[in-house]
Length: 355
Image (cartoon, one colour):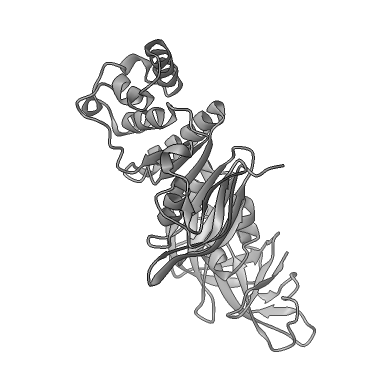
């Protein structure tokens, strides 16, 4: 099967600084992906290269088997059949909603243009607002107008550069879910740039985690969470804590929480230092457990408390517990580990053991 979008060993530089290093990813079947990372990690630069606004110094970019970029050559952006939706929506304030959506349809017959605009406004739920102006709409509605305008010329791929970041968290995730549904209905691939992992989880089938220009892992949200490729991904995704432990004389990992069930990383011997990834849902509150730890902090989350627990060594651990278990800071409570996916790292080295 020919990949829908494929990046192979892409380097991008603003001399003398290399911004993207050897980025490779594959998005299949007009799928929906996300480039996730902190500010300055290079995700927008990579998106701009896919759009045709940045040249590549090494590697190639292909869409549906057609080469878009290689060193020394770039297909012009207007020939790529790629749509763009930015954080700055850039709606024209003097044009109606319908005219904003129709702006990219120059050259279409009038009847075809009107039909396409009507279809898209129905698709994004704004059919009754066609004659209004952008300032008369809410932020979420303006986002839908920008989406309809970007989809109007029927691009094969839509690039979204943090378009929801100005919205509150709940609306952001709701709109990301809605945009995903619209893209699927249109049969258009999507690639989102975001710094918000929960937005990425809602929106994308596959997610790439970037760090200082390197694509650390391109994978499903499930695998990023449960099978991180390296220590950076493990630390970046979720609310995990990396606990320092050691391999004992029996070749098992001994922690201050007891001996664990997971196997140490390959090649480890007695006395080697390792780290175990422990997430809040791996730690169960159990009053009957002999393992007692101190509550350092608690955060009420409605149905749950997020407890920060202080271990004897001073290390901190997170635990999610039903909110009817209400324990103040300073109290000692019983806990036990219940980890399905053991993720271990050699200290300061790459991951070598999952499960």
